[in-house]
Image (cartoon, helix red, strand yellow):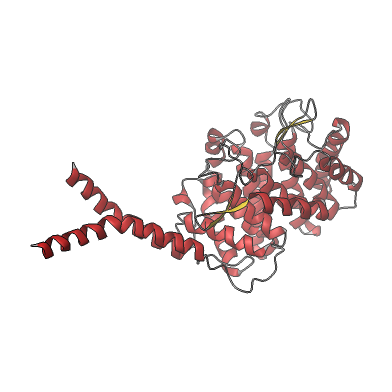
Amino acid sequence: MRKFLVLVYLMLVPCVILIMLWVNVAIHRTSFPESAEEQHHVKALLADLRPKVRAGLAERMQQWFPEGAPFTYALYGLSQCELAARTIGSERVVALREARWSLGQLASDKVKGRFPMLLPPDHGAFLAGWTAFLHGRLLQVTPAAELSKEDSAQFRTRCDRIAQTFMEHGSPFIPSYNGMAWPADAAVCAAALSLHDSRFPVAYKNVLTWWVKEATQRVDVRGMLPHEWDPESDALLQSARGSSMALMTILLPMIDPAFAADQFARFRLYFFKELFGVPTVGEHPNGVGGAGDIDSGPLLLGIGPAATIVAAGSCRLNADGFHAFEFTSTVDAFGMITGAERRNYLLGGMPIADLFIAWVRSIPAEVQTLQRPPRFLRFHAWSLLLLGIVLCPLIFRRLAGRGREQGQ
């Protein structure tokens, strides 16, 4: 038995050393936000995702979690919108076509059938919000000469229903399902109204002002937007969580910059942390324990991989270039990237992660120029400590052998 354990140990040591070397090098190989290299990586992600999405990826994701299909279409379509905004010629034409196809799938009866039929606006806040948000972003990046009156009118109708639901419900956190509401879904709805007013004559300024005022009156004990809300009693169910705050702080800058700045500052204070020198985002506030769930995905010592991925986008839009680069580096270091012209993460085994990464890295970044990239010295120090622990048995065995030789 002892010989077997020694053999297993000797086999594992090289693997551990190789993995440590890999991540310690990979964490320094991330491209800067808005660089040509980063945009090449986004295109490579979308090149890998396109045939998968067209071949039924949404249905596979739907089997993993309740909103898998609509999230697939929304994130893929939004990523294509951002690609269209940065390209010209045939590449832009293809990106716009893919985005419009995604919108059609998101608004299809098959997707709608998974949500409450009679719940306003248009099958609940989640589906209505992401459909209108994708539609609005698509119209934003479509040249004016190519806009149709019918398409613009359809978007206006979607926004009117959202605005009407907000005002009739009386709460900024309208339901996504019967009796269930998540503020992040309502934030997507509000962001869609903002997209309308940035592309067309202003129509929802008063609604958005009302939404921000009401939302600030429903924050949790830390002054942050809640994760889950009871729409029936208009009461908090779950305080702020990393995954939803990361998403909302991407959306809030287009709704109200001052409110966005306040929420991002609190998000950074309570959720940004390090795990053995690795920059990460917790799913629960610092010092508060909790398990993962469908919203957060699996957690590692309280760290939310999904929250860390999306928080990089949040930092991009809130002028925090340093943390945007840090979180992107963390994802690239531990993401097990494969491929060059067709790129994926986690060996292609978690496409929803690829979709989120493609979206957040394609969003135009409002970040300051970094003087120098992070050095990750604490992470390297922890890695050396772990390497020393792993090699301790070999060192002790060698020293013991020399001691016996000298004793003889």
